[in-house]
Image 1 (cartoon, rainbow, N blue to C red):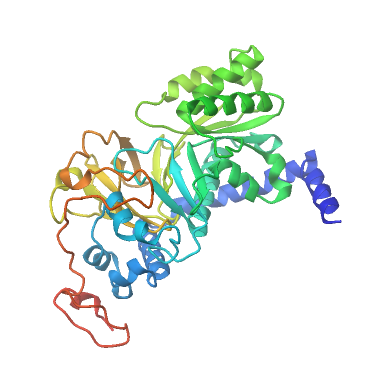
Image 2 (image 1 turned 45 degrees about the vertical axis):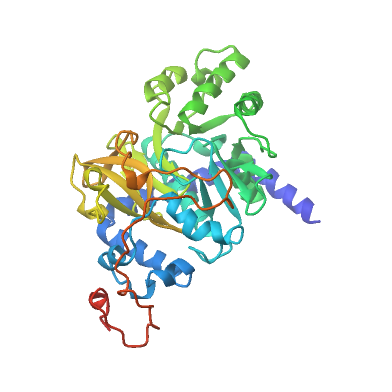
Length: 439
């Protein structure tokens, strides 16, 4: 009986009337999302995000080690939580706890670990995927679609399918690295059944990896997608370029706009060596199709291009707290750390994140430069020329449970002058924590 009801809902959701209703509702939600994004205060939003993260992480081992119960603002956080590199975070907190990562730096459960197929220099090799992180990534996807609907108000976005080509990130269950699946395949499986007709995802990996298998799956997806009305494509710039070639070969068409007349947008992420927007626009062959760049990391969503301003817009309300470190201070024991509201235009900053992945003030290997304050627009710079400081380099283990690596020692941070944190209800004073004791 349940299967019959589920099949009936799927059939109903795929009707033209249902798609028009969903399109209208989603367009209204997109308008509200854009208004909300424009009206919010960057400083208040980031402060609220930081305190929310600290509240959720105060009972973890990391939270106890760094006196999270004493953190009341960004100054307390910077004093109690030093900058870290991915190698340090793995060595100190995740490797000893693997595969039971819940409670190490983020409260459990931690059902998945994410592996990027092409991690950037200094990035986390493995990222714990908590339910909270999953929710923030979904919010970022909805924000990207809201920008698309705002820029293309006449497009019938829900009349076809959203084709997810993948970001190159695979997920595996903690403790079982063999059973890997693409992020998009898992995301589609987690959707309610009546939303399945609206999306087409990169096929499941079934533990298979490598460029040859990746090309095989792209061919499979290209052949499937040409038989369907696709209104939006999403993936990495490199994978999109290869996908476009497969679609042209399968259909004999020179332009993607001829294959999918209802195509409204192409959402993409790109690295320094990936194809640029001009190559994608040439392959699409229609100015009516919106190309929208996204800066999304497995650790959290950072920025999405705002078509109204033609620049990557920082996402301050997507569950990630941002800190920006001037690149010329990276080698110092205590480099300056600026919040999003304190940045200066034209200055290259190394990006540090705190997010529901259980990373705290972690330098992820990305370098950005702000080009506008209101709204906060940034440009992603090539990190290789900046991240050669001794304190930021290091090799990662071949497997998660490998032996700790030698790593340059960091100066001890000012927690409570070497004393253990007392219960928050007990009086406690030290030279380094006096400012946080306000009760």
